[in-house]
Image 1: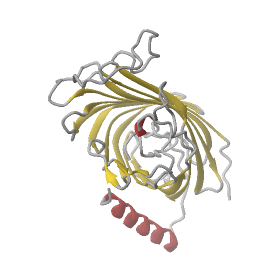
Image 2 (image 1 turned 45 degrees about the vertical axis):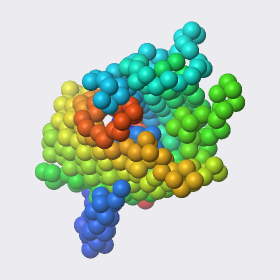
Image 3 (image 1 turned 180 degrees about the vertical axis):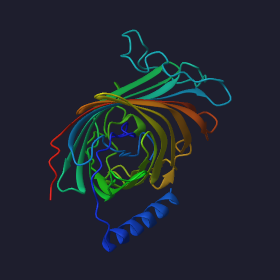
Image 4 (image 1 turned 120 degrees about the vertical axis):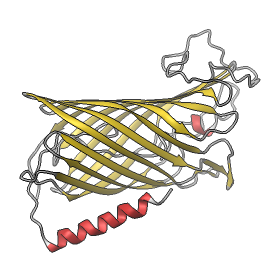
Length: 345
């Protein structure tokens, strides 16, 4: 789950064999290779780690990402410009000419509500399904765009290459996986004049995409860290639009606190995302690249089979061209229920 960077890990024994060591070496090589390749929040797919090993789970995720303030025009960006998060008022202007005044009230906002299902088909192989609902908004001067709908469904399979040993001082876990994104979201949404909305405002991309990911976690009794690398390969849709291949990488440090059945993980997290952006008829759209670092605090709360996970990412640095909005940051909240800890053969 995107927000679940800091797991309450149940550590299972792993017999060390030559085959296991070979698999570890191959996976580390895989991680090294994809680290040198070139998914942003809108066009990528971050897996993370669910809070329990070898447990099926149902998760609910809400993510809010906002862009506000023009480079060289505003010194600060707002997380909640008017109408960016809440429902627009009836008197909010819906359709007028764009005059490009570089207003501090202009924004782009992306909200996602997502259901995620995980099922272990064996002790080491997990299957995941992501079902998103998107709510996208854009405001430039007096022109407001608002579109929502079900997005692109993603399916993936993960393999637990290294599982932690309870008797070790430092415990390790390594997961690698691959998956596909299906073109289930609408890409033909229009405004009240019948004109098609911009690509970034559509609920889906209209393309079949594939992705690879790898996540490594280490932990002592109280302190730990994680690294997740994610690479996405994007296809074209029926309108000859294509997002450039992208990567979305995460790193975190966390500290564990226990109070009987209640477990807390406080954390600091960093995220790097990069893509060359949108291509239309094989021509790169100039203002669409993303290259940014985000960082912020996180808090994960676990009680038995339930968990609540919160992250607040602020933009640390990014490359933004003249006339583009700055990225203010991202807020993510997740809830998770894990069940059925029966180990599978």
